[in-house]
Image (cartoon, rainbow over all chains, first blue to last red; front, side, top):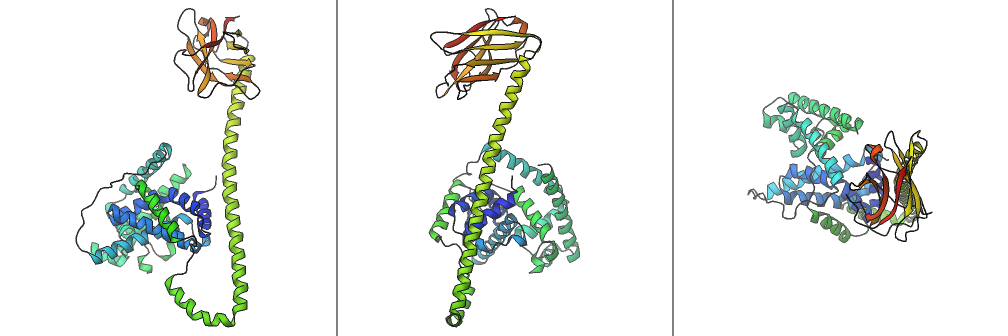
Length: 188
Length: 239
């Protein structure tokens, strides 16, 4: 069975030729990760949906910009989702300072095959446990860096910690998560 | 911008791994309607996904004058790019087709493994030192004939039937073990092969010495706890 990244790279190449079915397949594979990431960044269901839609539209328009030599298809897409989500969040914050009431999701989650959902939920739970197992300052620095898009200097200023300390916290946190990912990959 | 990279420009791979870990940990199924919204928006956006960004449109306008001079070269380069694009698209389609075929072959292989395992069970029962047989006689105008083989020591059993028509849609054949006048016990489901033969292992029979006969009935797909359809084959167990 081909690695997930290879399949997604093939899908990106097909999308670059205007293949709408490939876009559907890519959506089905990555929408949950994209939506979860956008939701953590935007902290608002409507904004997260806008970010996911914008990310997939950029893929549709710019899939030809993906260069396999520079990394995997999935990280490329997730970076796109993160950047779009952070851009939309900042745009919204600069336009309106009024806190919007956090609306619930009126439609409900999309249906998913029970075995896929169970496997995904199990893996997500293990990774969440890994995150929760990080020392609090490491986890906090990591989440600010990835979910709020702040620079190291900005995090250091906000947290009142030296820049070097912030960099160490983030790096150590990432290394621990990587170890967990390697375990995940080797244990299937 | 390097400072915005969460762990530094030399650690892109680590950055990717962490981002994937976070996205996996917080993966959330989006609302069902979002899928249609995204796909509809892409459809409306048009069938030419690769569009140059705005700043490049400006550069493109400036370059247009130059292109008049270098038109021949540009046309040739464009054609080469198109050919390369077509070649890549063809490779991508081939890759996807190969993945689909591999998937189908894996399913076929799994089916064959299952069939081989079933045959091995039947052969093991046939070769056992304490095999008992129930000759199954047709009931109520049914045409097929067959035997149930039971290893009196282990309780392993197999059914072999010939001239067996495929069960109707939504139906299956079910084997029953009978112990004297007690209610029949389900002993396994089976179907007919294209050459109208059934060779299948049965469920392992507990306390095989108590079994006196076997029967076959037609049941809804998935089987029944007790016979609900017509008994089509039956026969006593003999040593």
